[in-house]
Length: 304
Image (cartoon, rainbow, N blue to C red):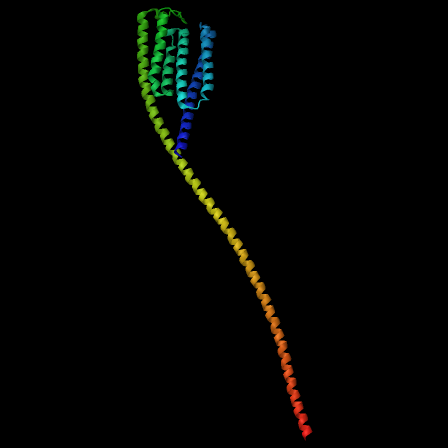
């Protein structure tokens, strides 16, 4: 029973984890689709010069999400799901960095997407990955800023006058603010996530206890049904035996009644025979008495 309960809990843990991961991935898809539509509208309505590579990487990201969802649904082990999810999270950060590059680097609002992914990772990935999430995000953004500053990567400007990336003080100030923001976001989100994890664990334990009690109750109900069925079977068997015995007694009573009637008839026949014999014997005695009287009378007449 304990092994079965553990197996059921493991399956339930996998189902809960998979549901949470799929929810996060589908949320990212919805955001990307919405953002892609906004970019198309801005490109053609306001003539904002978004690069075609930007569109390519958005579409590539969405395709990767669908492929990963297809892959993750077929996993049966919770640890593999967590590891694969973290690996895919790192891939998404890299793709996000490329997209931020085409949005204008540190001058763009693309940095806000990092905050979304930090919150996303801390809430949906295991606690051991929290610090790695922030460090990877900071490393990617810092690398992008350095590559643009050193002009190893070309800088894409969506609006005129964007030259912060050329100013070392401005770049350093922006990076410092971003690092401080990411750190503060990490601390706040980690605490909130930890509190939610504790509450979720308590809820899971309560659900497990309820499930265990439910299983015990079902077992008791099953035992009760088995006893009830056994009693019903015994009752049915007893009724069958009682009916059979009653039928035997009725047949025996009917046999005895027939035998009594037969014996009574035999006795009546014998009694009638005895009565006839008695009548015959009495009649004979009467005749003999009359003959004796007749003989005596004849003797007296002859002697006289």
